[in-house]
Length: 492
Image 1 (cartoon, helix red, strand yellow):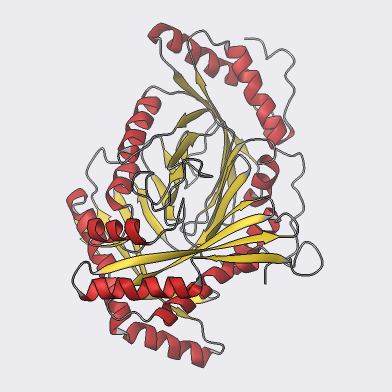
Image 2 (image 1 turned 180 degrees about the vertical axis):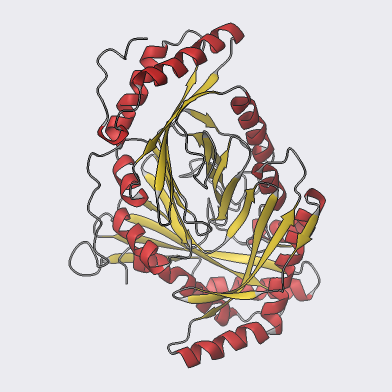
């Protein structure tokens, strides 16, 4: 079989066979022609380990769509660049519709190359992206021209999975959806060209921890709603809770920033990576917008027959000394109000996982998750012996949004938010992540995040409101939750 005419060896691919890539594309083209339907072609090769943040920062400027993922769970990374196929659905059934389309697409995928079974994150081609907090029909103040659609899941044209540890490794995978009549040689050439564009011969130098330019960014800031209006909403929510309308509701607010120069996203991600090493780092590039953050909370992880969800509710600041920090932790764990807020979330997760698992366990109860700026009550809910055939998108459909992001009971609390919050959350409090061809994967809760376009940014924070909530305390909690993104963007 001849090598691709005009093809050149890629420095980062070493001696990877272009013949093998062309063979995969030809087999996919034959299948597509014979069955008269699109067919997914996926080819893999081993790659020397590269810095995922620098790789994403380089590749995102060459494509309109990108994703960066570095898991807090196993330190595995995923960089997704370009688009082989979109699975964009709308409405209340957008998650099950996405799942059904993904299952059809990967069922008869044509694969080849040298994949690395030792990698912990994902097998074969992946589906990446996320879902908004609410749909256009249920979101408060939703705009049909939102920066990110209510569902944006896609198969990347180029994906690089990496592992951490003593012997870091990586796998490059090139994906294409081949339609009847497509030229397989042109498909292979296009994939090689994308790889040449997105994979630098030398990694970009990592920025220092300090600001990229002298001095702090100058900016104009607008709170949505204003501080006093938001505190008034807290009081309204407390009144409804005490009247028995619902048990808990999560109120969010936005801080909109206009800076005197474009934000440096590479530096922002490096700052988040260094300051919050135990958080999941993510970034989604879509056109001119980038949605990114470092979230301490994952929604669900599915590995083998074990599913894990994290109940994260109840927040307190860090103390300035070890002694003061221990005092704050004791107040956090001893607070009846916070314990109630946390228990609401854990009960919902247990109830959601139980019908889909042979056994559900919450361990010894809540622990305290300590971050650089705050500490949280946290409980891992684990379901074992997951029913055969269930993938991670089944769990997303059942869990999203949890009481940690919306409230409890779900219907009543979300209905109140729709009528009263008046905020277009977009993907804040939504979920971001990936699924592999077997349905394994990880999705994180999109908090501690910002939506950036050039020199403008929207930062978000929210608080769980229960019967004993104090408006001023809740407002100050949002300020603490906004600080990671303010610092990352060079605003303080």
